[in-house]
Length: 216
Image: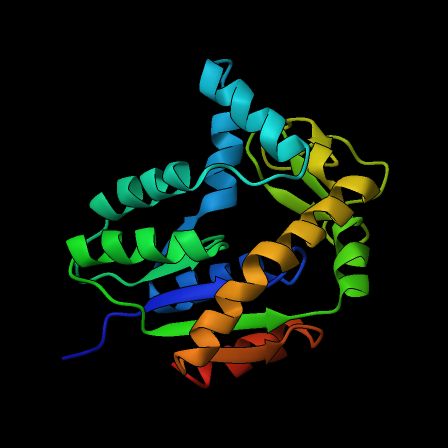
């Protein structure tokens, strides 16, 4: 019987996790559970929860673990047992590992691969300062590649294209500081379990992808 893939993608902001996830989703027919996108969607709602989430992520901080667990549980309910999953954006803290494993156990799943896409802090800052996003449809863009620097209209939905509030230089530094403090122990955890697969994220998109699929 063919193994059902349950993949975790780890890496600092700007490492290309989202890009690699999309390639894997397309070529392996996987479900992409992207915590960051789910939280940004919630943050756009003018509700108490939406406003609280917006304030947290706009300051470059992390949302409470129970909220992440709730999103994962909601997503897992809607995935066929025969369909593989990519977890992008969780676990980012030691506490999330326990809640993720509990959610997986409920659905009789287990993690098959943990990929750590590694890039330097300098490269991370450089990449993040080139990103824009559509406020309406959430499509991400890269200045100089998929959109011009002064372009403000989304070519897909005609929504407004902006630089995310959490991607100004100070917010980026805060996010990276939090990443190392909170996520480095997660990387160490999977490394000690013998599950971590380190990938050089400063290669071309295609080379990073080929390195990943060589393990699948």
